[in-house]
Length: 421
Image (cartoon, rainbow, N blue to C red; front, side, top):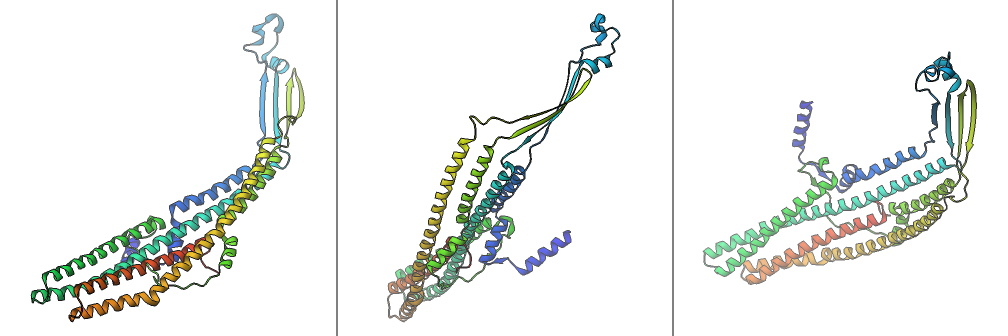
C-alpha cells in the first residue's frame, strides 16, 4: 500500500501541478464543497421523513391482574378461607385482563402525510440545486479573479523586463554624462512602479487560488494547482426573450417556488384529513371469578368543538403566501435575466472599444515615445507619461475583460443553465 502511494506521488511530481478548467472547477465544487455537501443531506433528511410519515400507528398491548392477596388467603381469614388453597383463590377470586387496541386512521391521513412529505422533498431538491447555482457563480467569480491576476502578472513581468532595458540604457547614459541625474532618478522611480505591480499581481494570484481552493473543497485539489482557460474575448449572440423564456423553464429557485405551492396545497389536504376523527378499537380477554370472557370496544371522538378548523384556515393562508412568493420569484427571475443581459451588452461594448482602438493606440504611443526619447526627439516626461498610459490601458483592458467574462457568467446564473440558448 505504501509503495502504491509513493508511486502515485512520483507520477504526480512528474506530471506537475494540476491545471483545471472552469467547467472542471464547477464540477469539483458541486461534488466536494462542504457547504454543498451539507446542503445535500437535507434531501436525505426529507426522504427519511417520508418513511416516518408513511408509518402506521402501533397497536397497544395491555395486561392487568387485580385483587391479588398480600399473603396466604387461609392465613388472612381462617374462618372464611379455611381449606382454600392459594391456586384456588387466584383462579376464583382475582381478575386478569389481556387486551389489544388499535387506532384506525380515517380520511386517508397516512396517504396524505406521505404525499405532503414527498412534495417537501421535491422542493428541497430544487432548493439544493439553487444553492449549487449560487456556488457555481462564486466559483466563476474566483476563477476569473485568478485569471485576471495571472494575466496582470504576465503583463507586469513583461513591462518590468522591457523597462529594465530603459533603465540600463539610462544608467549607461548617466555614467557617460549624456543624462542628467534628475532624469535618471525619474527613470528609477518609474521602475519602482513596475516592481510594485509585479508584487501585487503575485499576491492577487496566490490569494485568488487559495480562496478558490476553499470553494472547490480544500482537500480535493493540491496546494500547487492552477487554473487554465482562455482569458480572452468570447463574443456571444443571445436574445433577451429567449433567455427569459429559458429562465422560466430552468431556474431551480422558480421551480422550488412552484413546488412550494404544490406542497402548500398538500398540507391543506392533510389538515382536512386530520379533521376527520379516528376510531379506536379494542379487544379484551378477561378471567374473572373463574369465568373466561371476551370484550370488544370501539370509540370515536365527537367532533363538536375541535374539527381542526384553525390548521385548515392556516393552510389556506399558506397557499396564498406560496402563490405570492411564486409570483415574486417569477418576476425576480425575469429581472435578473434582464439586468444580466444589459450588463453583458455594456461590458461587451467596453471590451470592443479596447480591442478595436485603444489597445493599439496605447501601444503605438508608447513605442513612438520610446523611439523618439532614445534618439533625443522627445523629453523624458513625455516618454514616462506614454509608458504610464500604456500600462494603465493594458490593466484597464484586462479588468474590462474580466468584467465581461463575469457578466457572461452572471447571465448564465440568471438563466439557470451553463449553455445559453
